Image (cartoon, rainbow, N blue to C red):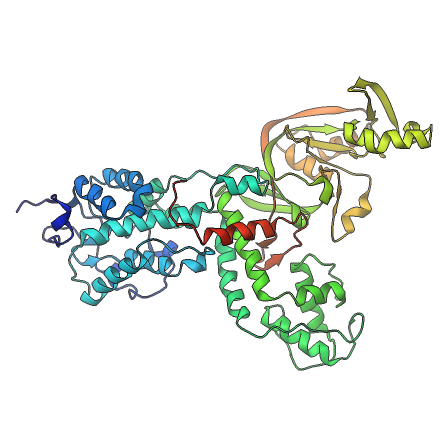
Amino acid sequence: MSATTRVTGGLSFLFAIILLCSGCGSAGKDKHTASRPDSTAAWDKSIPGSFSTQTELHIDSVAVDSFFRAYPAFAPYAGDVHRFYRGRDYACAWFDRQGLIEQAYNLANRIRNIQDEGVAQTLPYAGLFDTLIDAVRMQGDKSRPDLRLELLLTSEYFAFAHTVWQGMDDSATVAVQWFLPRKKVSYQSYLDSLLRGNGAAASEEPVYRQYGLLRAFLKQYRALSALPWPALTADKKSYRPGDVSPVIAAISKRLYLLGDYAGDTTAEQYGDTLVAAVKEFQRRHGLAEDGVMGAGFMGELNVPPADRITRILVNMERSRWVPVRVTTDYLVVNIPEFRLHVYRDDSLVWSCNVVVGQQMHKTVVFNGDVKYVVFSPYWNVPPSIVRNEVLPGMRRNKSYLARHNMEITGNSGGLPVIRQRPGPSNSLGLVKFLFPNSYNIYLHDSPAKSLFGETSRAFSHGCIRVSEPERLAGFLLRKDSTWTPEKIRAAMDAGKEQYMTLKEPVPVFIAYFTAFVDSRGKINFRKDIYSRDGRMAEMLLAETDKPALTAR
């Protein structure tokens, strides 16, 4: 027999052949003994650089075609599998002379526990896959390569990747008005990089980091859902520090289960340690952090874990859609959180409160590039506001325009064209940040500063009001040394509109996450202010009735 073993022939005997191991290269025995086959070792910590490096045991391309005829549910990924093996000159990836490598067991564990990934589907041929994996495990490290299992492993990888990392198809994003661009990942290239072990980057899964963080909390809340979760009923309107009630002990027990409290769960007095836990819970749920246990607090505390699980699943799906990472400076507005997050080199620099669109004037989920900073801006009043608010105001009061520092500059479509002059009372405040888009949405200052202190901040007509506009201007212009803090302040107060073009446009993402993990590693939940989670949950449930494999 030649040093290179190549399998050919018809399907009738294809899978009966047990490929010989003689002459196969070895990547080291330690990867077989590092963990038991049934361990739940994290794939992303063990897979890079540990695949079979052998180059002598090959698969014939005809055998690959025969495999897909025998297992048609994998047909959508035949091209991916062929491209992957062509890049390896059709060398086996999951076996070496010691047998099946550890990473095959890690993949098998991920597939067996796919519900932990926040999806309801099971992958095709799961029973056969388990049978073959278990048979090899029983044989031990000296088991000989099995062509069918080799191809099953690779095909299951692509099935897993598209189901778990890609998510639902583009029709789902349109249905929920999610206009951020879907990420584009070559899963063939990603698997190839894992096989080659291209450094630390290869250990990261091709999905936005919130996905993995939420996945960890999904397990926690599934455990909580198995516990009794009766609604706690307050015996007074609210509880403040120093109050005494048996309900306070019940509250402390629940906060303990949720991870916010580590003190005495039997005390009926509302003490300082519990105050800190209550404020932590309030922070995680977007409530006023005042330590007062009122109706809003009790309402959030009584939400069943099953409902939280649904919200986690919905937001894990959203995490599948967004770019894996952005290496430049960028901005993120999370609409339900009412917060703007500023990133430098993919690391959070600072955050501030924002005001977003009302239910009837929803802020659109999309992305753009901030290109201009406009100091002392005019506000060109949109025709809808002219029609619905300004004209009725003019009819009621002849001095309406003067009182609002507005002027008519022309006519269009039967309506006056109206703008508001620069100044402290301008509805855009003293500065705006433009990222040209068809939705006419931008970031801007606001004279209504008190609104930034509200816990729910959906008040605008769709644009996004920023609580720290001067700081944002400084961040965007920091690469131009001529724009000192003093110059920025002067331009904001000048009363004369001034456009500045950024040397490098800064991406901005307007997103919608109602469950997320913050920079402290805490799970956060927010109100579904635009009622989008329910539709998402329905679509995820519908996915359970679909095959896990569809070409995407």
